[in-house]
Length: 605
Image (cartoon, rainbow, N blue to C red; front, top):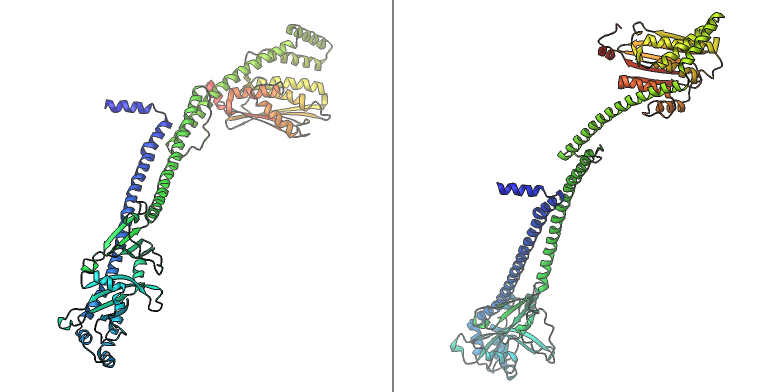
């Protein structure tokens, strides 16, 4: 167990690339190559053995067919030699030629015809005798001195038995200057001792075409050579036609094997005495076996290449799928450790690694979202505090001394009261209250009634400015007066409408404030009939309002939106609708139940 445990630890320390390479080498490549090599060697041996066996079968068949042909001729010679009538007619003494031909016609002339019909591979049958009363002609010949000097007769004298297989070249009967090759079965006719007055020889000439056919029928597989007892190549697959005075070539064993690469088969024609010394030599072309081996090797190579590269390609694809995704996962986990929450953008797949990548992306998204929300909340709070300080500082910077300004406004108020300037008195009082409220930033959430009260003071100042060319309406649902809202959220919207929407209007200027309670939400709308905005301007303002950092434009609208978002997060809905020359409507909707639950009260709405 300790050994396996240590081995597992070492394996765990190896990188995936090396592990996959080891798996491929040890479990795929080396086994496949080893199997293909063994298969190659075994198939090569099988083909070698099969081809040699086929050649041996071909060789045995050629020997059998040639032997059967020669045995047929020998059997024919036996059938003729045991016929008593031949002996009677050939051993008789004839008074004259007429007496011989009468005897020939009465029994010998048609005697050979059935034999020639039964043995189609026999060319001629001749019977030779030294009976001087026999006339040469047909199938019967007087054993003259010229015949005794022929090649076949001389060869027959050297044969130790009554039957001889002879291949000899004699002058052609049609042209004495040319020589013709004969393959003959010669037999001494001495079956009946009582008819031994004269010597008798039976000569059966076998068709040379038949012998050539037997020798050449397997020339595509073997080069056959028929060797006689004198070591001559009397018939051969590749032997050219002999000239008139050319003798049969002598067979040399050391030349039969083509540089030691050829397969040589040697078979005797038979066991009988007349077959002694006769043999058939078969030489196989070495390129034939090489071609068979090449075809099989080519097939094995193709199988080996396919069986190697196809699994290799599949394994590379599969292992790369695992390896690449695991590497991506590792890199992104390192990024997460360094505070970068990038998603893994790849084909996840439906396997376990794909599920792991999907879980990692979900986890990263949630962590990033949580961190982003916390950071954004903190930034919003800091921005709100900064905006409040900036607004207070801007207000303080706009006046050299707030007490000096209030004292001046009070002096103007006393003078206006003494001179009975009621309108001016009211405006100065409202302006003083507004300034004091703007300076007092101690509490950001105020009841809606208070916000609308100071908003109406601002509207009265604007009405004083524009006289009878300005009017406003305020409508509020019952039960909404006590709801808390961010300080100056309505007044800022009204001031923005007067400053940007109504300033350039020549006719009647109107502002409408509408507060409604719908279900668990309070909806505040501020609408003017000012110059409105083009779609491009409206889109730009909407983007500026939602920017987390201010660039100095649309500060009022952005301040209202950001403070609403601070208190109500995504539950607040802030909209701006405007068309050119048709006015602008700003609306925000905020939940009311949640804030009262936090305070322990619930309005009766």
